[in-house]
Length: 338
Image 1 (tube, rainbow, N blue to C red):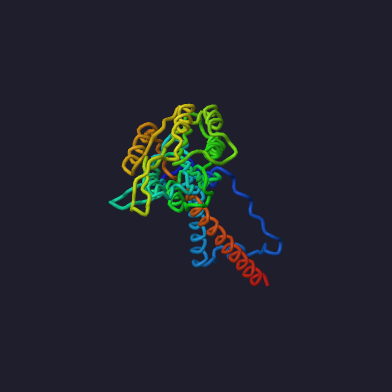
Image 2 (cartoon, rainbow, N blue to C red):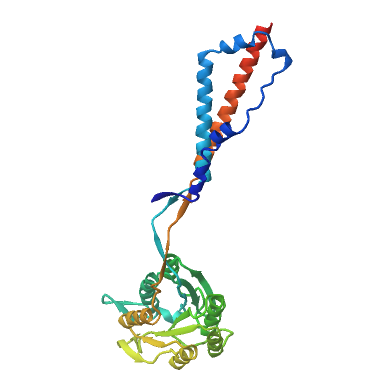
């Protein structure tokens, strides 16, 4: 951190009191008639040394107050360390399916079976952390779609909200069209060419009021690119009286996912396990890279308040001291006149 003066030319005002004393005519001294006494000269020569010393102190304090006022006028600032910020970032909305089918345990991590939603939380959380400089938002959808986190630079909070997502909060069905419509509403106010929606689901559109393909057309008109991710194994493990068996088939509507991505200039990805899901998000980092252009910014902390406050305090003390000195002199003159 460094100290700087925003208006250093203000220090040219420092000699102003001296110039005023030298160039301006002195005011004529006048006193009330009651104080005009014949032996005024004797009184003047009899001023005590202590009173002279006090006068020097008041003048010194006055000069110090003037110096503080000029310093405050120069606007002292504490300049912080340089902070680099991205000039432009993407507005990236994530729509995550939390319908009942996301509880299917067909993913694996460290040899342990986990649900599709748990896998998405693990991988998507790391993806969010890498998107430095992007505005990230989160939509959760099931039977209904709702905004969990608006577009924000606070990636940590978005990750926390994703990890706290619970199954059943939005219903058991899948409203893909409503999720896209809500994302359009949130993204349309953002800068063009940087609007991105990542839609992740494991099923088909079974609920909602908006047709997914019509929503995709609206997104394309708004310049929003949609990347769709179909998650889940192509076969499922089912417990039967004869033990655990694999059954084929999946509820995922891949033709719909591909059509949505194609209409908006995005891409469709299929993630059948944790590793392929990680590859998908790595590809998204390559396709929509984080902006590397940065703008240097140094935080400025104004500190003019301190010298200004000290100057006002000294001025108040000087006014009180001079007032007391004048009162003492008037009392002394009155006694001698008597």
